[in-house]
Image 1 (cartoon, rainbow, N blue to C red):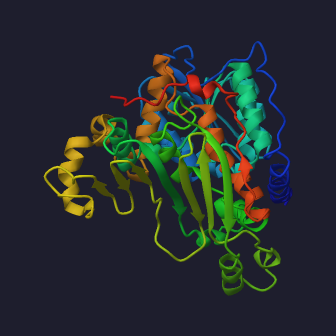
Image 2: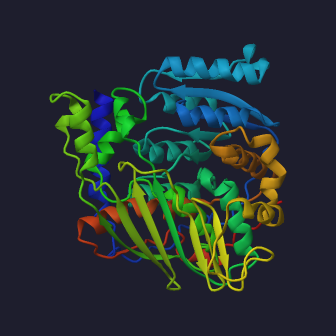
Image 3: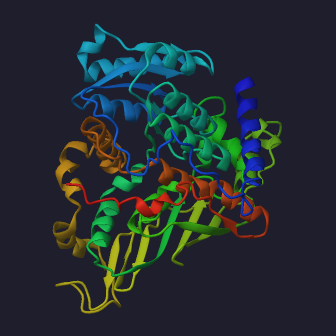
Length: 460
């Protein structure tokens, strides 16, 4: 009960905090002398990466499994609220790496503070965090303050204040903090990035992104699992609660917060809130705790972002309505458009050997030749070994890149500022939607240094 009360209180606190950090934020103070801009940060190479895992549910399991299959890695600690989760993941780990039967990682469970004890006792090189949203910020900050690079599930944090705190900790400790946006490593997302870098659709003007995923069934996870805490966010939250899966890829196509352009402002509107309340009434007794909640967040939220160069992004979120899954994933340029769900391409003058003009999409079987020509080299290299790693292989490709960058001392594919900008759509959309679409300015988490950050290269 204490944990549920904490999550509810924290959710409400995040919503309230978001209204205090909006368009009238004061001029930022200069970065402290000993702090370092982390846009292209290269950490000391780690020949062998010692990792701890906090949160061993669905996402934590996948990260653990993908990490443990890679050379030069060692799992030194497992941490979760529930002992059964820790024990099950230890068995999984021993199947992947039999040596863990003799030298087991340290195991922690039982209360909300075990992760703190773990950090004190184990001192890992990196920490993977896959917990409820309100714990992301304190756990990431705690990890960095104890000398570890932090890798955090999405979103990076739920309030502007927490995003700033994460950035300030990363800059002060000189430790990576990456929000693990796995969708950036999907086949089509990598394909579109490759095409954009080649100028295939000309100068980029507009993007559309979404996370449309009906998840009402999670409300049946009443006391344990994602639904036990996420349902409270649907009741007390506002705006777009989960923006990064759609936004992350298109933001990197457009080089936002990297040299070329950055986020400027946002307006947001939400529909009436109907679906969750109806689902609770139809599926749970009248006196059930879900029927005691007032679901106030709209079923679907639409936000429009304006960039410093005047380019636009449309971002949608809906985890309630009965409709098929989509991330939308559209990028439009002066010479054509790339779109997802289903994947399709249109180009001025037609697509070579397939269409004669831009009035017909290239899609379906016509895309087979196109994939052969333009698939991202990273996908070509890793697909065979990662295709069963989760989410169509994107999870495995992401973990390979994380480990490669740490072992070779390279900048990460996603820096801490990108995680902050993408996650900031959450609290900013809440403020705008609550204020009838009042524009909200993005904080410049980089303090102007995004202009010095190189675009994400096409990695081979």
